[in-house]
Amino acid sequence: MKKFFPIFFLLIIIVLFVSCGKEEKDDVYPEIKMDCCGGFPLNCDTIERGTTFTFVARFTDNEELGAFSLDVHHNFDHHTHSTDPLPCEFGPVKDPLNPFRLIKEYQIPSGLTSHLAEVEISIPADADPGDYHMMVRLTDKTGWQTLKGISFKVK
Image 1 (cartoon, helix red, strand yellow):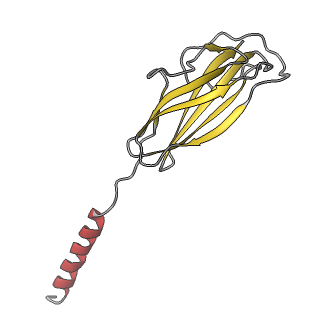
Image 2 (image 1 turned 90 degrees about the vertical axis):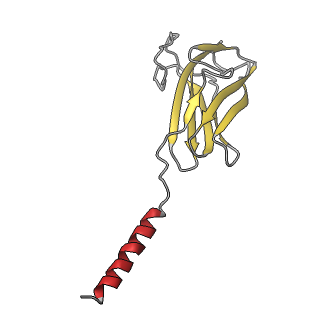
């Protein structure tokens, strides 16, 4: 019995040492803030055809940001992606002829926990006017993703 005590004691110490070295798991979603820092567009804003605007949003994460993407597409059939509690007034349902569309991903520089995103977006003069959506997807370095959907009008 005395032979097993030192081995048992050594095994317990090894288990405790190994279990103390575990990293904390990142289980916090990143955040998208558009109602700060000159954020644009906001839900229900109007943007003119043939102009360029700057998308602005603040992204934050508890550990490290990864990337974000923008998906702008028409909402002529009144489907919804909005995450904003304020509903926008829609125009009539219509078929698209020349709708504006943008899908693009942007990398955030490594090591950042906060990033002010500013992206120039041009809406062609011949784009269909009407209701549009913008989906903002933000992913942190460990893969957690947050979505923000807003509606806006193109005139």
